[in-house]
Image (tube, helix red, strand yellow):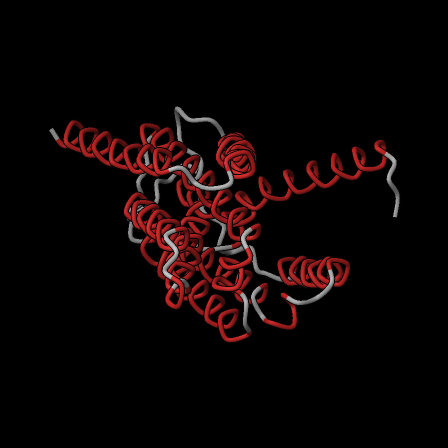
Length: 285
C-alpha cells in the first residue's frame, strides 16, 4: 500500500483507460459473435448473471482484494470462451435489424434517458452505501443478497427480450419508474418494508444496464450515423462516466437525492417519449 499521489493518479488513469476501452469494445464484439436478433437476450443474460454473481453472499462479503482477483479470473474465463465462439453469426452491418428502433433520430433521445438513469442510479447507490439503515435494508443479509441477485437476473433477461422486440424506450421508461420509485421508498423511511425499495432499485438497474450494453450493437452500422464504436464511446463517456460522477457528487454534497432531481428525471423521460412519438408519427405520415 502507498499514499503517494502519483501512484494513485497512475492507477486511476490505467483503470479508467482500460475499463473505458473494454466497455466500448463490447459493442462490436456483440455484433460479431451473436445473431442480431438475439443481441438483447444475450446481453440481458450476461448482465443479469454478472449482477447475480456479484450478489452471491460469499462474493459480496469478500475482501476488496479477493473480489478483484475473482473478477479477474472470471474475466479471463470469459475472454477464453469468446475466443471459441463461431463467427458464422456475423451479419452485414448495413442491414437494419427488424423490429429495432433504428434511425439516427433515436440516438439522441436514448442518450438523454441513459444519462439521467445512470445519474440517478449512481446517486441512489451512494446514498444507500453511506446510510447504515438503507444499506442493511438493501443488502444487509444473505437472503436479501440472494433476492437481489435473482431480481437482477430476471429483469436483465426481461429487458433483453423486450429490446429484441424493439421496445428499448419502453424498457428505459420502466427502469426510470423503478429507480425513482425505489429511491422514494428507500429514503422515505418505510422501516420494516424498506427492502421493497431495494427490489425496485435493483430491478431498474438491470433493466437499463441491459439496454446500455445492447442498444448500439442492436442498431449496428447505419448510413448517415457515426460508426458503432464512436457512438458507443459517446454513450459510455456521457451516460456512463460523466453522469455517474455527477450522481455521486450530488449525493455526496447533498447527502440525499433531491425530490426536484427526481421530478427533472421523470420530466426528461416524459419528454423523450413525447419526442419519439412525434418522430414516429412524422415518419409514418
